Length: 273
Image (cartoon, rainbow, N blue to C red; front, top):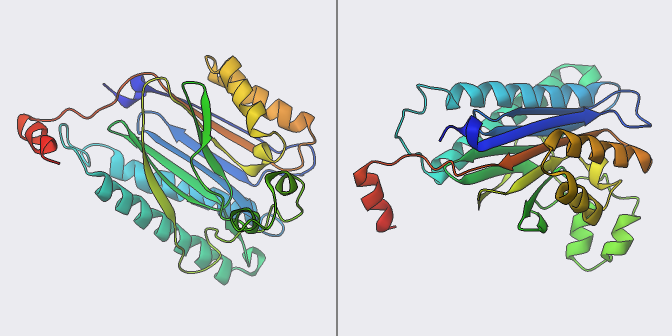
């Protein structure tokens, strides 16, 4: 099964109702099983530069790696190998963004969140930094799969504030990790099983700050059969609630299994794992 047949991806990004320009950047390619979202930060247009560099460099490097003949037919790469490759690519881009901010005064202090998701062999490998999020809707259950790297999340985890207090907190944008701010960064990475019927949402905080998870889930449940319509409705709702930040959405629908074909010896080996 080709990835392009098994996966459907839709992207939307909008400046919102307050910001004069859009510092979010998105990329998605179903044929590669790759989706990337970045939400930039920094003065003037520096945030836009950081997010644009991140999505462009990651997309270019990973496209080159994932395209034939880099992945020969029948070869099954281990999740561990792919995790390390994704970590290496994010680290390389982190250095590039950091060096740009150090060498060009107008970009000083710029950085960005990032969520990079690679769908392969009925799994999704997710690397993330910051407070952009990945959610999954499966059998009616809507679940956040990433955990924000933010002061607010640390306060929640420590029991210092309640979930209701967090919704109205003024500390929402204080990140504890981001790409490009320091020369070295600890990227969080996880692997999740993927099943036919799953619907994944990657979004910047301009969406989930304006709409709560229950509302997002209701839109996906009602309109998930038409990803373009669902994405547009999510952005419209966020703008209707104030649109205080840029809003970006990537939706990924899993139509069928995309297991990589295995030879007899690989199947035998898998039985002993």
